[in-house]
Length: 242
Image 1 (tube, rainbow, N blue to C red):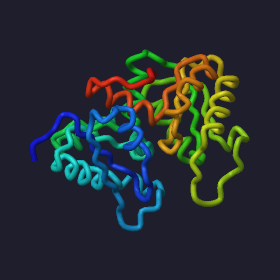
Image 2 (tube, helix red, strand yellow; image 1 turned 120 degrees about the vertical axis):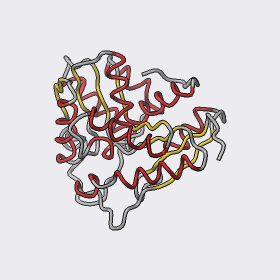
Image 3 (cartoon, rainbow, N blue to C red; image 1 turned 30 degrees about the vertical axis):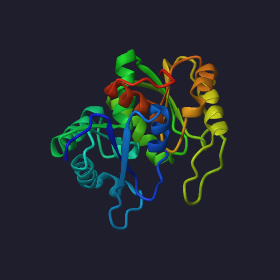
Image 4 (cartoon, rainbow, N blue to C red; image 1 turned 90 degrees about the vertical axis):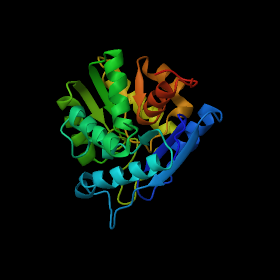
């Protein structure tokens, strides 16, 4: 198929109606076309084992989107970008492999976060891990440190007392919870150069400016980081700056 430079393909996580495609479509005011597909390996359950085995399914999804005419592939699900990888270098090598298979540019929410950290030369990072269980949080901390950054602190909503420990299905945080989390992180780690919000279920687009005021430092969130890098690739303007 003939490719259009402004066609974005989103690879969405299993059993999740990802809000990112609709949010980006609204941000771009119709200047881009967005397609979406889902990965759903048999019996997938978000265990660490299944997450580390997701890459071939991402590759197939990317190839399918590229074959349909997409020229940029976006992978928003944060665990797919760091769980199973030692550091950002290894994660980017996986993206390069997907690019080679699909023939188009591939960006993950994790690669977008690190693109911004590198561009702004931010070194001391506090991690707002939102709904992450401790197992995911600890792996994320190790990943960021192994990527060459100083992690001055990391807290989830449960660690901060904003939520009680979940016993079942993950409930994604609302705006109030995210803002309270960033407020506590800012107070607890005043020496942090920036705060990184992980978890693509933590939607921050509507509260980006509020988060800046609360923290008084750069706040890099998985969702808006991905949008920022896509916008840069397409040379389109978005109404926020990270």
